[in-house]
Image 1 (cartoon, protein in one colour):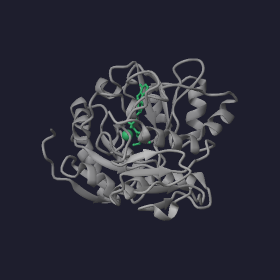
Image 2 (image 1 turned 90 degrees about the vertical axis):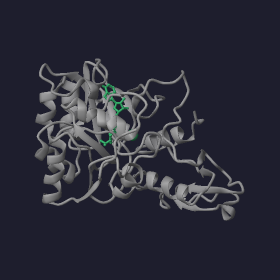
Image 3 (image 1 turned 45 degrees about the horizontal axis):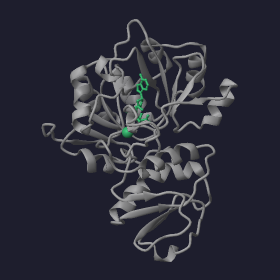
Image 4 (image 1 turned 120 degrees about the vertical axis):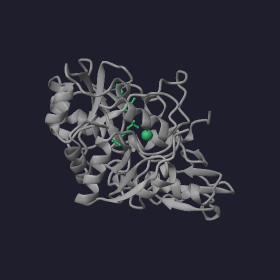
Length: 331
Ligand code: TXA
Ligand code: MG
């Protein structure tokens, strides 16, 4: 169990950002906003600090983490980018894309943050607070989502505190995140890039830039890239407390309803609580509110959340991915 720490709430102003950077440089744990979700940051070059991430999250194993850097040049110092990786970096950074590339000869990221792999996952986030923090820290910052292991990712500072208050040194409060889902992860290790995790950049945008179809890999892996438990078995790691039932066309007694696009499933009037992710059917709006909606329905005490169908286009692929994980049988 991690030793208790007093958690400071820092405003996302120049003073708060400077304090957060100082804490990171001292080996502290600081949660900060990105445009996707809040990350739990530690100096990626400091193995002791990185170990603190796993302790605070109660992560069962040392999965590789994403290292965040302020700009493309800083990423090029840590990883070896082939032509396709470079094209993706230049097109989508800063933004909700993570690229897995080979480590550079002088990659400073600690082995604990890459789980001892020869590759490193790099991302240049677009959030101005994240970019200012990374620039002030001057080192790659390892950051998984700032939730306890097994919980839904945080999209507000209050979500971070609900999970990690007393376990981390500070949270920089930058308000609600814009995208609301984690970054898209693309592996550029082989000749053909592979989509490891759908996320904030839709598959279609990446395929259009590369002019080729993206193969999918690691899709069924548990949250945060643990090895799949068994072939075809979805992780139960990504879950609200309530059970989740997908593709609902009706609402059973005692269920909460999570709707999309103004859906009116049979029995909706008996739902114990109702949220519509986007009454107008906008997938970007639905992604941005997904995790907050799951937390809110949980807070209303529903035993089961019934979710109406969501299309698989654009951000729908990532939304459906997270919901499938939330609905997987609990281990
Ligand atoms: O939006 C996001 O990506 C957020 C924000 C905070 O940036 N971060 C995030 O980190 O979601 P995390 O730790 O939850 O996800 C890390 C993912 C895992 O699926 C892991 O397996 C993959 O990155 N990953 C990291 N390094 C890798 C590597 N060398 N090879 C393959 N996958 C890697
Ligand atoms: Mg996570």
